[in-house]
Image (cartoon, rainbow, N blue to C red):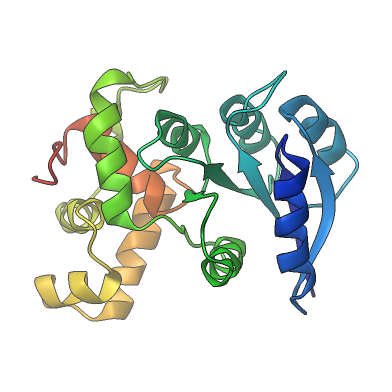
Length: 223
């Protein structure tokens, strides 16, 4: 079954380029396009989509607010934020709004395709080191909007789960965490799954964001 992709960008030429790349893939299909956030929300009401490639700077409704509205709905598609500049405050805001990651618009086609497949399978596509750079720069400026105090959320975790969360936030893969804690990789994967469930998070990107918001990991990567 093909991955149903929606392109949301106010630049027609850019959408055309992405569409050509995706159309050449046997497991992908561009099922919808939109030139701004308002149009995107309207199209999504009538179109089944698996992954949305979302620009951030658009007229009428920007990509961050559009992402927030999409991700707050029932059974939302996964959202990949597209940004022109690395370390973009819009990209960080997009992660907090529920996006599964962000990519630069000039990403090589192969990386874009891998990212779409990864997001569709339920993984996050932002390299933890890149996410940390975003957080190092912007986390102190963006207060949490959570209804429940963020530190109280961490009380749901066991001590081992907190250890795993810190290492995830520091950018370690499951294999690296397993070696660090002398655990099997399967056990680490189980811990990560429990962390996501207990804290109501969608993926590893949101684990990193929460770790910074609570001070579990400090700017610069230290715990």
